[in-house]
Length: 325
Image (cartoon, rainbow, N blue to C red):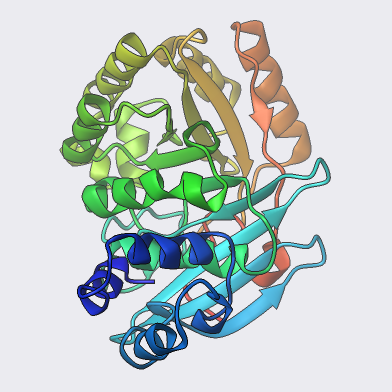
């Protein structure tokens, strides 16, 4: 919902009318017709002049594990995907996209193989969350879908700051970055809310990381890690590290030792991510991942091996590519 357009349409009305519309939308209302504290005339004006969502739902798919993926189009026809992940402990986590496509071309990520279209607006980001909120309450959000949030900093942060109205507190909101420093520096300097920071790392050395993630040529590891350390010093919040496990590429014991040398376990929490097929690599074996995890344990870390969710509908980490699978 484009609340700026709602404000424009309701300009002759008291300012609280816009807040009433947003309150209904944030609680999961499915149409203007449900907004019973607005007059019929105002609801009709909104129906006529403001689309209830900035996104058009094109396709939905549901995994055997309960994960749901939604494919949307923006008003100008660009594809966007978002994912709802229900967990057995009751959590309902939504993975949001901040761009249609991604310009950073990480080799292991399906989104990076797409054509980049454009940044999404804050309302287009929020409408992904609102779509799933209309189905059921949500309580966690990760900005880990299509795109690099720090390349779309203002819209991503504006959206994140409205999520508490939808039921997601800042402490349950995570913004991921490959280390795009201009946006990361702004995040460290400007965002005082306790929004979590995740670093998409995937290699312990510059040489290997540049092979996997071309952005590393522009912003090498020492600069990115230094900014993460500054985040910890200012906020006293751990940085979550995402590390996708690629067979024979970044999963050896030497890589684990290198990761331990690079990171301080008091500051960084490592999440190992099983590779979800996108056509470029093979995933590490269970045995290899177990040895890698054990090596990190011996170096003082408490690594987590991430659950794979929605792989059968191409909704898992790294698989979003605007398909209707």
